[in-house]
Amino acid sequence: MSKDLAHRVQNAFDRCKAFPEAGVHNGLFQVRGEAYLALIELRNLCPEIVLALREQDGR
Image (cartoon, rainbow, N blue to C red; front, side, top):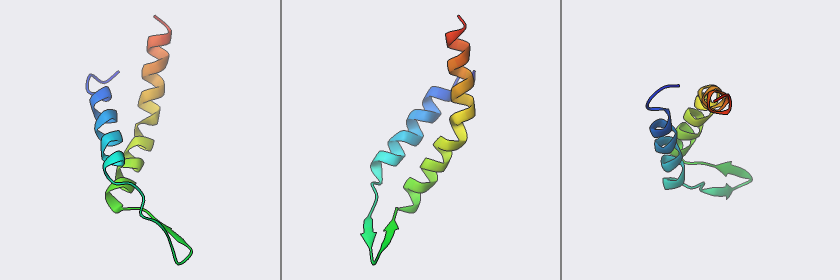
């Protein structure tokens, strides 16, 4: 497990919270770009998170 994984996950999660969705306008759901990028970062961290959880479960 990466030593900074928890920090990276918390940082991305905090960025998602800081930029809530803008809502529906003219039938389109809009999200602020910064929040969307943080959400993509969280998605990309998922494999590392799963591996870290498996390591912890095996102990």
